[in-house]
Length: 356
Ligand code: UD1
Image (tube, rainbow, N blue to C red; front, side, top):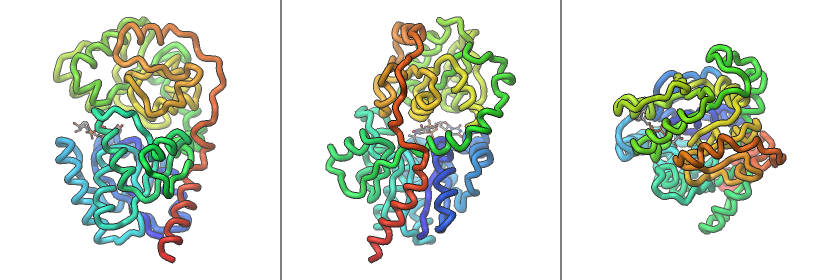
């Protein structure tokens, strides 16, 4: 089979690593980088570190408004599909690249497989929620990370070719254990195991609203604990353009590579984040997560107090920082780290049954 895989943003490069390895054992993969993320430390480092193959096509569709970016990717992916005639187009997650590629494929009657299908925040103000809902409804194979996600799709009438395959990011985390253990990032950033916090902020709801990003940084300054703050380019731009003050205990640093970020996460006292991926990764490595949003797609992580939703409320952030470390065991709700292999088998069967 010939699969056209679409990546464009940081979390997708990470998710692509195990799938590309697995699918290329037996089949042909054509990899398209939309260019949504283009900085060295937002893109190239992940290809290098995780061994993601060199993209066959680069669409250079980074920057611009949502509509401009999405439109450029739709047109770019359409041209590649026409040239390559793949059996199937595979998309990851919930970014503009995901939706744009799914749309281009579905309109050309090429089947779409969606990895990380069925997630919902039920907050339509999030661009990611629009992207994931529409992608699921345009997809022919829905590869869900949890039972909850399967249930979400069922409530929207999507029942066919829906599979609970676990989370592909767990494949990456398990495989990367030696490199994460070998990271020297704590020494480099001069922080001591268990005695610092990790923080990341990049969601539009927090960065496009100056009051929210200002309030978050002010709350970060109300603890004396050092905070490592890898800055997403979107967040950096907003902080600089508006002259927002960074408190003295907060250390802004460039975005980290995967191994260094996982090492920082594993050894942090707690993590404060609005990222989806980090909520799960925190759960897997056993670091309590404080989510700077009002809702989460990863509802399983809330069990036993391992993840706490606080929005941008300074009182709730302070309470969550003071809360004792949870003691309840974490359940294996996102599979067992074999998601990539399961996905390839499912796609083989799907294409066999459709060519018969
Ligand atoms: C995107 C995804 C989000 C995902 C996140 C991971 C959408 C709607 N959002 O958000 O789901 O969790 O990626 O990081 O697709 N920029 C740079 N350098 C880069 C990349 C971006 O300077 O390498 C700038 C862009 O020019 C833009 C801003 O950062 O001004 C935001 O980039 P954008 O692609 O819109 O999405 P993210 O905020 O990164």
